[in-house]
Structures are given as C-alpha cells and as structure tokens.
Length: 144
Image 1: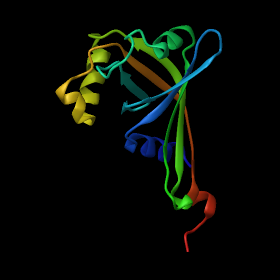
Image 2: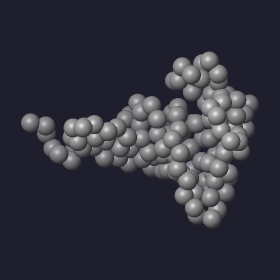
Image 3: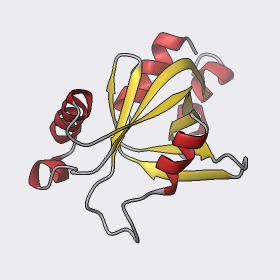
Image 4: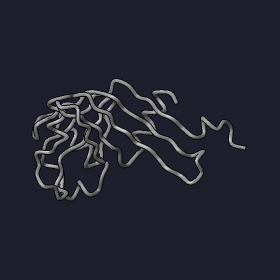
C-alpha cells in the first residue's frame, strides 16, 4: 500500500486506536475519534464520561512524544481487510490555542455528536512522519 493510499483510507475511518508510552516505557492504547489535516491528526478531550480530564495519553505524550495511530477495517471476506498505521510525534495543545480551535472545528464538522457538545479540553496533535498499511486485496492478488 502506498503512503497516499494509506492516508486516503485512514482519513475515511471513523475511529482509530492511539498508542502511547510514558517515560517508563509502559504502553497505553485507547480508541479515539479524530480529524485529519494534511499530515496532522487531531483528537480532543471531550465530554464523554471519564474519571478525569488529565488523561494518561496526554501525560504520556508530554513525557514521550513518539506515538502510533492505527485504523483498520474488518470484513468476513478477508480479501477486504485493511489496516493503516500513522507513526509520528504528538503535541498537546491547550484549549483555545488557534491550532486547537481549528482542530475542534474539524472535529465538529466530522462528528455530529461534537456539533451538540464541542470538545472543550486539550487537543492532541500528531504530526505524522510515516504512513504504512496493508490490504488483504493486495496480498491476495486480483479477485477472481
């Protein structure tokens, strides 16, 4: 899969999984909703019930900015399977920063739930350095 195809498939996904690791190297993975702008992926701290808004993913990025984000699509026809991984560096943006406001606008455009209650917390920006992916159709060759 080319980087261009990986970006295209990733942009069409509705949910992805964010992998971070803290200063201690301990992995942490969570599902996220996101918006993509060029080579940057955005996700925000929203109002869904959480124990705290001081999320571990944000603390991990502050301690170790190397992250990976994985989007995939499962199908019973394994020739239709695909996954895309975006490896990059995360940055935590304070709510209200111009880039964070733009990210929230992108998120509210993409998800109806955010139009009702836009995210008001910090925004995670991930600057993608490498796109990679795999497709079952490509691995299986032409479908008969």
